[in-house]
Length: 440
Image (cartoon, rainbow, N blue to C red; front, side, top):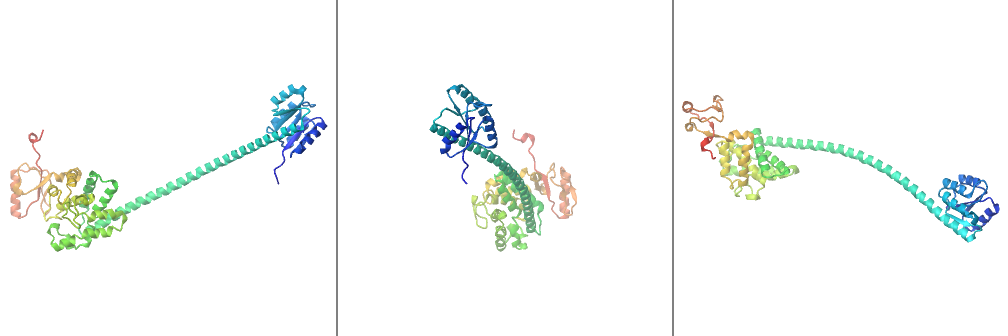
């Protein structure tokens, strides 16, 4: 079916005028409705939607202007045409103002002029209705779009909450994985240290290495790799005979040293396949390289050695010197510092050593030991103060930490050594310059 025909309502109390108008408009493809009075015309408008209304100005009971005024209220989009003669001109003006007449035609009219006026009115009415329909469609679409937007916002909010929940679960899972990873690193490190656990020394070594790394500008990620490398730097020892690792490094024979020098490679081979520990494995592999190129396994030099490996070497040897793992003799903290400083730019990076000297005193647990020195009994002097409790091999406390030595006390200690034929390990506070000797 095609579109419905446009509808025109003709209102006049003269039946012959109605017939004449209908005949004149028969050439147009429209439906013509007729009414003989304004009241009858309003009844038609209650029942049908029309596009154009033509009415005479003067009708009984209701004038054309009164009728059109009500037409404008009932069907505002209907175009309104007034038929009038010269005598009705003033009334026509009122109809234009009150009834919203779009055009008026003289009586008698010209047929072509009437058809042209109706055609133009129909076009305008059609455009008006299409515009209204488009407006209503737009409004409906806007309402639907608003509803969709609201629904979308709700879905986005719901999805965001779901993602936040999932993200929280992932964060917890990652935290648990990280914690598990840390525990596994500690477990492997402890296994590698068997049968000589060094938990306290390992903790101090790690604290010193990380403090040096931070001072030397390592970022957070590099500090994590340094932490793992420091904890696992002895992992490769499990591949070396215990008879070798139990000896101080400088006492190893050539064959024993060759076997010991393989331990960094063993550790790297084990750790390299673990992505999280790959960089740590590279640090461990280079921990025994010397700054002057005389280290092992590849004899790298200077900055060709990873900075973290240069840091690890200093932190490692500082504690190993005090533990007697490098020389037969266990060094005091001060002696260990002096030994490392003496090998600055040879075994160790001079810049790293300089930072080490500053950092080592800032670690609380190291401060007291760095202010002491080991003294033989024959070298003791009155007024010296003990830096540690003086304890015999049997565990007997002879003198408490902080005791100020006198001539009689020193003589008693010398006699004790002579009678027992055992050397006492005595640590005294380093001498502080007198107030008048300090630089102003």
